[in-house]
Length: 449
Ligand code: GDP
Image (cartoon, rainbow, N blue to C red):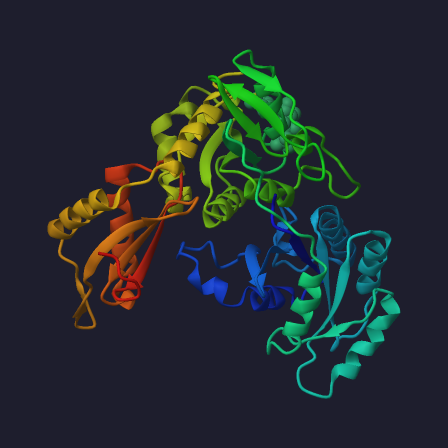
């Protein structure tokens, strides 16, 4: 089961992203550096007093919109409606942020109307209460009929503990996915609207090479589809959501948010793109979320039938993909046409290979033999007069392949050296299609001989 989802809504400039960052706290800092992708992160895992949940700033997930431009009032209203609808549809709990310095505005009232009509629990966050004795400023918001406004300063952090206590208290429990030994893998299908996700699913379900079997839903809806590919059973996560578009007014398409939720319940994501559009910034972002979540990824270029022979030049595509997905250079690619059925089962077959790669465990002696040869092949540059010393490596128990390196001083690990180690590791052991995590610990932090 996916973690409970907490959505942040509210009009622009009330402090949604400050609140998002405040809730994430230190977790933000431990994410691997991925050029340009962590910067505008709007979807991440958080925890408070041992309760884990996913947090999303829905403003950033309304697709195809530039966040920064200042919209006209009417457009703003429409976007708020869309954003709020998305939160109501998908979230287990909503944090509705208002700004005590600006006071109650008509858009706040609009959002509150939508929220009051839904059954999703809402916490009203009265933000920008900066300084003691100003809590009374929040009182004005009682009028919204959403319960007690919780005074808070996202910038200073005051009120954050109380807010998080109230939040996690109301969250549903989530457990791990039920174990299923007969299952080869769980696959999610992601992508912008109209790239052909539902066409691809339908092509797969109609292909004589795949055998469709019904699975009872394990979560709120009977939402997953079970397939046989080469005799292996695969679950396509939340295919019902893909095949049944336009669930609610305002949320016309299978939303990216819903796709990300499906991704959390899967081993590997297929990122479907429209080959005619090339690779868009949105495609890169989605891939970034997948990599950050530590899931495998297969890049799927759909609508291949619409390209001319010259446009199909694979060398050109390879370069394009390498440039756009430089943080996931290890991701396999499939060129397909959902319409003609050309190679439609290939992404699935590749995704299953990726599942296998993720399950690989390298024995510690073998890893250390590899480490010694790598250390011998290239001298580690010094940093501030000190030299990194890598002593020992071992693979940790984790669904995302994770390697723990014991070193004299983790601060001496330069980004480029980390990258070098990762590429050498992949060269030797594979792990195609999956992110790998490299963790550096100070020697003595643990005794492993
Ligand atoms: P979704 O929003 O990602 O689920 O996209 P749909 O599956 O609804 O497809 C959007 C449009 O693209 C529809 O009109 C499809 O018929 C069309 N389409 C999807 N895949 C292909 C393809 O491989 N080739 C062509 N020519 N059209 C496609």
